[in-house]
Length: 351
Image 1 (tube, one colour):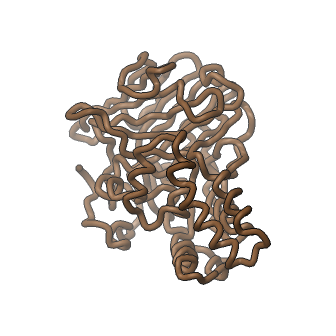
Image 2 (cartoon, rainbow, N blue to C red):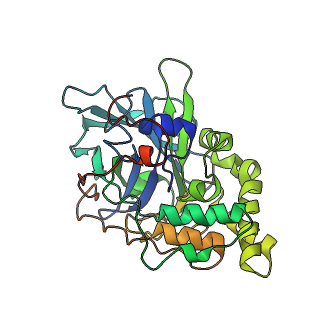
Image 3 (cartoon, helix red, strand yellow):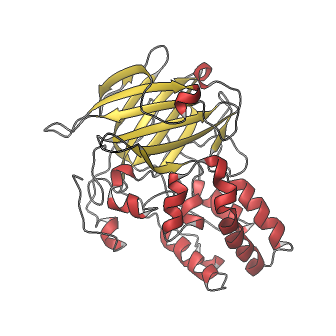
């Protein structure tokens, strides 16, 4: 949920399971980019980053689906205390499409903010998961749709938040707006593995809630989505999105289920976040502007699918005042989500 435990690959290794992507104004004249991995870090996932993984924020400066800027982040092996060295590169033009090289922007250690040059900053480490969702209600709602039943009542006035008390690891960059190349851009994040074999993309995210709404439970098409590129999303996955959306519309009694399905497909595909640098962030599939940490992503996305407001997730925690704007980890005695979902054995640290 948003993008949590979204594929067999992500279930196997939380370090390469992209959970969420945030794009919002931070300091004056700069944009903050945040990606999260390691769902339920310390219980279901490690608390470190994978040394043979390339974590990227990707930008199409014309607002389209072909990237021409990539901010590339890599990590060393963890030391005895779990800290890692972190390096940030920038690739432009055709070099942004693939590869691991780029112009060095800065280096530092996890848990510490460091400079990327004029008005640029970077940080990576453990943080409270900023996402909120009533996962149990959504699961029941989607199961109902699959059985040709409509259960809007599962979204109650007193929702649970399955991520309360859970942590993630995050990568945060502050990038000057002038370095994003355009006045309306498209952004997504991706992870690839490299070093021991040809570079292989294993995860990506743009639109929050695309996967839990339309690719749940995860299957082979989830892997295809994660390995793909935004330019092919509508051809490859539009039929699946339209089918679920039209089913919801028909069962809800909307007047034109096919038209609703087309609108939902256009809202969620391609899998990118559109953003105007310098403008306030406000998440909304098919519109809006970027995504802020305190946007009620769950409720908004469910409403787009259903054609009316159904969800009532817990209010997301507000951003903290300073970069990287994430809240501190929140230790709590809770069972591992991986155990609750029966996904795999509890492996809090290591590969």
